[in-house]
Image (cartoon, rainbow, N blue to C red; front, side, top):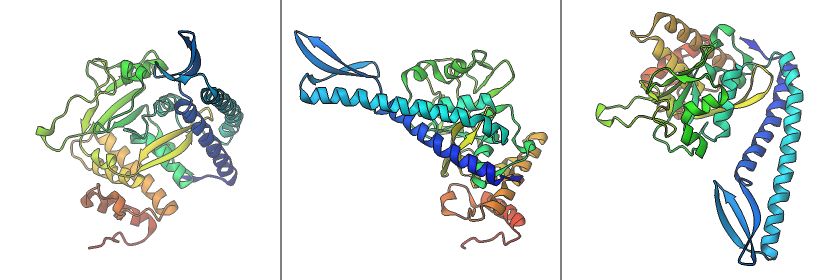
Length: 345
């Protein structure tokens, strides 16, 4: 675990601020200025029409009010587009510096997938990034870079909260998650009908996962993001509810090309407790157990030494059973050199 230098920190702060403005601009264009606005003549009268989601709606006959609305829409959209283009150019100019400072961390395939989920408005609103990729967000919280042995991975886990109603745009709903992936890389395909996993020609895997239901009687319909019958179906996994029901951490990270992206991940303390629990399961593959423990220990050291205020007895983690939080608290204390207790009995 290496602390970021002063130069790296300054560059990251500048990049984060710039990308946050860029992302807000993109989202405003996609919401406030979505669709188009134009004049149409109907029975010798001119009306102002607005098109959103493929549907035209009349805003009224031409008069001072509608002319003002038409002018405001187009001038506002043009100004935002110019701002977007300027910000985009500045971010691209910063990318070589980010690479030279070794700030690029997130694999390119992962970054493209995460950006697309964010662009479609699903990331952080029903979908979160979990597993090893969450560590990229956590290390930014601590102002460090974690060892490559903890970070290297050829797959990404997407946690789907099937209880929430995702606002899915038409193309994603029609093509599903598998269609979204194929739009980024045509070699992606489901490993089997009804599978939770897609893989591309390089062996990179995308897993769609969801918490297991507490009782068999509560079994729900297959959790698909889109409508296609061949879309990925989220697999139910025990213990994920603890990651689903804790605070969401939002961070801007940098990909291997030096370009930023936004991530939504579970609270790192819940991640730590979950990793320790998974590593202790008798049915867990031995090699994966070792990796789980290594990630848990690496994260615990960072939390204890760089973010000591993040206590595991925080009420915000009430969704994580106390029996799981206590080992996490003990591990944190071992790095902090303090008392593992701190529990209000």
